[in-house]
Image (cartoon, rainbow, N blue to C red; front, top):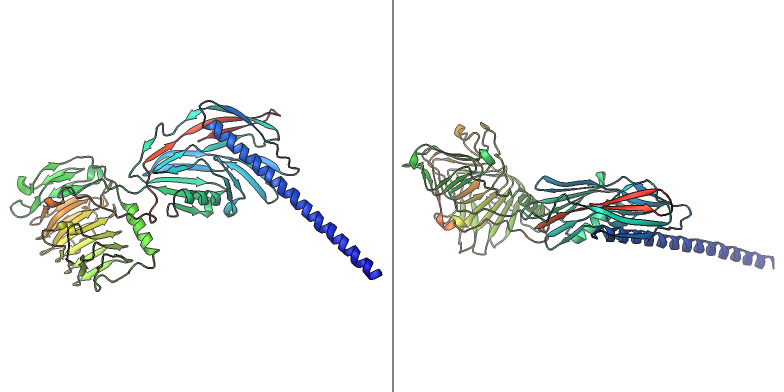
Length: 513
């Protein structure tokens, strides 16, 4: 009997304990739901007033919490740049509820639960990307440090805009940096709105970085030489027109200097504003995508033929002292991505079985140089295309060098300072010092088109424009999913909204940016 009574007593106590825990958990869950609902109502009300013409509203901010506190924190900043030019740099705060490990926050038009890498988005912020248009009317809070329970009155005070109209940014790289304690929630949301490639996270600085836009190819191969690099994007021709020189149109952002009147046989346009977009980001992304793709072929192009319409990747310099690069276009376009430079001495780029529209395209992060070899097919420059960054140096030297193709590597400023050595020249040619592109002394012959930096053509060397290239535009072969999505229009606006605590004289101010 005693044993039975003891067992019953233990059972009753256990039921009371478990029941008590369950009741407490239910109360906690109910309170958490109430807090979340209150923050959602705050979010809805502020957004509605901020985006109205001249509105006001109120929200019941009665949390009913016994121990939790609500504070405004001076955390968070958003920075927006386009091609390196800063368009907006705005700090924003947050309204936070904290009780033990429970954290809810209103920030920048969104509601977040948790902090750091544990953050979960409850309501989406004011970051709207769709069909190439990015709108950023992001609310930013400031004011008193504590918000008490009760009715909060919301009133709009006006609108400001760092960008006073929708800005046309096609072809530019738009970067949005958001520094926030809730960075993980931001990152998850922004990946859903853009893609995985567009979003990166700097956990140490609690920062999410979003990059939008694909470099726009805005040039063509209508000139034999198009020298970019700003006011220092010069062209100099030391060749005598009777034995070398340039045949075809010449453009330069800088000056055009020629040894004799017949050194250039074609139209001349100095001091133009090229405004050609550098393609560095596209090439860098191609390299990163190739690195991360284990299925991409990684041959030695000096010993293995490139064919079957494939894309290949080489993670080093390609240096030849007699070996050739052999390409077969019978299966379609062939692409070679090189994370390094290409230097061919006594080596050729042999292209076989071309058909109309096919090409061997080379994208390189380094330099391009040839000495005493042939690149491409005689009289068919369209089948060989070399693309480089704004730092690419080009050198053609030797007595029997021939290149039939195109080079596209525009830049905003020269890669070399005056007198600095051009490292792409396989022979040391002092006349190449300070020139991004150098067709040095000898009998080098180029047929096609070069769009790059300051260009020098030495004595007894020649460059002939291939007129069949007129109307042909360069291509970056950007693939969806491997690059950030495009952006055409950008709109950044700031809306001032004031929140007044209806129960006390205490006030907080909310701004929307």
